[in-house]
Image 1 (cartoon, each protein chain N blue to C red):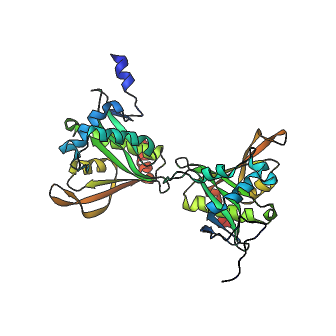
Image 2: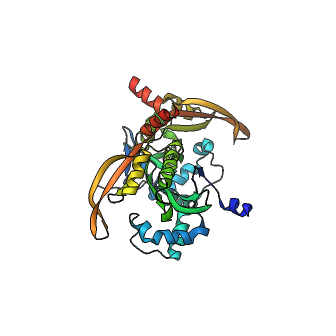
Image 3: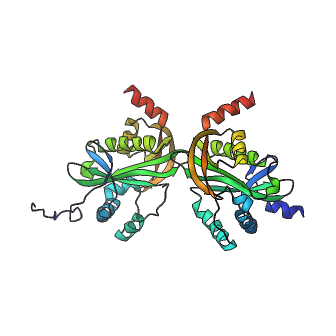
Length: 200
Length: 193
């Protein structure tokens, strides 16, 4: 048994055993872990992370605990997974599908990286690809939709890189740092995704 | 008089002889009668008695269970009364399939084409509105009437589960039938020609 000291700087990242749900190259998508609640709350409150995630009210640990206990349903309309960095052995963000509309065959895709030192490392790209495959190949959905503030360049450039097409720009849909901001809506259809894969 | 009638009737899907509407707590006595009637329940697999309170509880659960099943009341247009229930259960939204069921609770309405009409309205609804890929049915082999109905509506034989159920003293086979959206769609196209 080696000497494993809990890191003093990150007391909340004790040795967590992640449960991968989808495996990737540099990251896995894992089920959420109640032991990481403090970290989740930190992301939600982090000024740089929350800016475009629109967390404008401070979140407490209690809030997060409540949200963690979702009802047990057979067909979820919201799926949330942690982005787990394999080499560094830690959760660095969260992604998933919201508002899953089974009959109409589409869902909203969301993603954020909660640790800014992992931004601009193509992690979002890899994570998005895994999410797309899951949505089309496993959940049998027809379309994914994503929205991002126009100035949130990091977000929608990943979407466009993965083949999402601009559906429209919704004017003044967010209020950020004192002004109204437009939101770009992108979407990806399963048939286009398949065409893209076949041509690559 | 007319107002009272039209208030009761809330068709969700309109047919010729019947409409399909939401289930109605006011008719819980009828649902209890049908559920227990020996002739009606024989092939419907109700082997236990259901009292009025239990049926009411089932009714309450319907509100929450909306995700796995959809139940309608069969309303007879001319005679202005509910005569049975029909719908989908075991809905799998990811696999996009569901089990179809129809049950005419008043035996005097059997043999008049109502079963096939209800089933056809449901099949159209399942493919056109609920976006199913496949609709299946599970019918006990001795239940010739229902097997004929399934055939009329376009369901095709898929498999037999041998001696799957115990009915009135013997083990009988269960017949699985199914219809696929593409086949239904093609038959619709042919109708329109």
